[in-house]
Structure formats: C-alpha cells, structure tokens
Length: 149
Length: 175
Image (cartoon, rainbow over all chains, first blue to last red; front, side, top):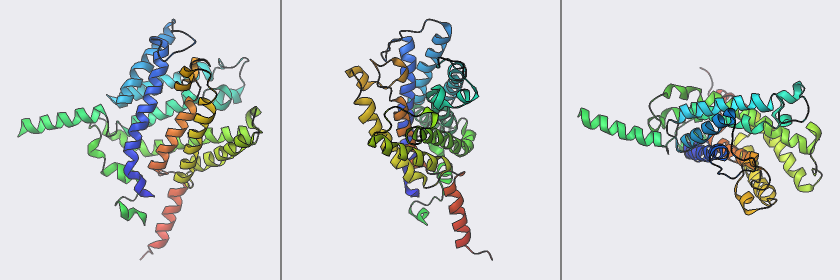
C-alpha cells in the first residue's frame, strides 16, 4: 500500500490545520473569549502567557508561517502544562501516587501529551506543501533567480 | 513489490526525495529526524489509545461507567487491539484506518449526539465546560492522527518494516 504515501503530505497539511486551529481555540478562550468557555478569561500571568502562546502559535502552525519555530514553542508549552497540572496532580482531588503522575490515562493529561508530541512531529516534519512557508520560499527563490539571471 | 507503482520503496525515501523541494529551505536538516520521531509518536499515541480500550473492555484504570453496552464493548476491542497494532507497527495502515473510522463514529455518535446546546455541538474544546463544548477534542485528534498514519505508513521502527526487510532479504539471494 505504498501508493498511499503519495498523499501523505496533503493529509499532513490538513491535520496541521485542524490541530493548529484547535490549539488556537484553547488560547482564544483565555485571551479573547472565543471559542466560548465557562471558565472566563485568564487573569493570572501564567494563564495569560499560556493563552498568548496557544493563540499565536496555534495560528502560526495552522497556516504554517515559521511553522517549525512556532511548533517548537507550542510543544514546549504543552510539556510545561502537563508537568504543572497533570503530573503534579492538580486535575485530581487527592494527592497523586507515582502511577497517577506517570499515566496520562489517570491524571487526565492526555490532551497535553498528544499536543506536545504532535507539535514536536511538526518541528521535524516541517511545514508541508500547502503552507505560507512554502509560498514564501517559492517567491524568494523566483526573486533570487530573476535577480541573478 | 508494490513499490513499482510510484517508484519509492519507503515513506522515508519518498519524503527525502520527492518533497524536499517543497519544504522550506531553512532547517531542512531536521527532516532526517521526522521518521524516527514519527515512530515514537505512533508508539505513545497507540498505547494511550489501547489503554482507553483496556479501560472499556478489561476494566483497567478503574473501568468506565456504561462500558457494558454492546457498542462500547465493540469500540473497546477495536481500541485495545487497534491501538496495540498501531503502537508496535503491525498491519499499521489497516489498523489505523479502522481506528480512525471508529473515532469518527465515536465523535459524532457520542460527543456530538450528547451535546446539550448548539454551541456545544460545534466546539470540541475540552477545557471549556459542558454547556459550550462536547469534549470531543481527543476523539478528533485520534481520528486525524490515525488518518495520517494510514497515509504515512509504519515508519522505520515497526514490525511491518522488520517483516518487509526479512522478505526482501529472502527474495534476493546473496551471491
């Protein structure tokens, strides 16, 4: 079924958009109140920082402008989020044991984990063919060839 | 070999040659780690998916209310078996296709169907609260990631790649 690999990059670009926009929604509900949330806007500095990173890096990854850098920052932020909330047991109503710290199934930290890994995959994979990065690159390259010739 | 159809013998080779000019030029050297890291991601996501199945069918992690439902049992077995197959890269594309389909069904039949408000039917964002979100973010993520696995294939660290290597070694006798 190697013929499926012809569409890998196309599917990758669609997934990048979906994951990036979901991530931007998390930031949007902390900063601008959209997507709607019952928890209200973020007020403490930690929440505001997280919100701005999620909003900006989410859109940058979704439309893939400086995608690798944005995805690296987003991935790091999700790692921090996992260790600050899920790993330290803030999602539970009792102090966590070792198993509850380590297994995302038990501490409700699955979403930070999958976001973290997905964004790190984006760091390594790159922007893909449908992206502002590749548009810019094509423009830069044509400018370079026209000026050199 | 099926590789004759498009001329590339593996996902890695395909990405390294055909698409190189389409990627942004800066930081292209990172692309060499894409396939190993993809395999790590596949392992982690597959195992987390399988543990959801284990929760439903085997009662691991304290079990889950409502898991004696027939639909939930079928879904749980798909998650358990499919998740393990994806994690270790055996029949990866087929397993990922089935799991992706199952997650799409789960999103629309459980998360969207049980959402109380029109707003909640549209937004999946998990942390927003039950009135404005259907909490289906993880289902969406699994669905799309497994679709990516269908198209990407198993990657280099997988049982599929190991089996294929053995087959090609057997088919070309050493001289």
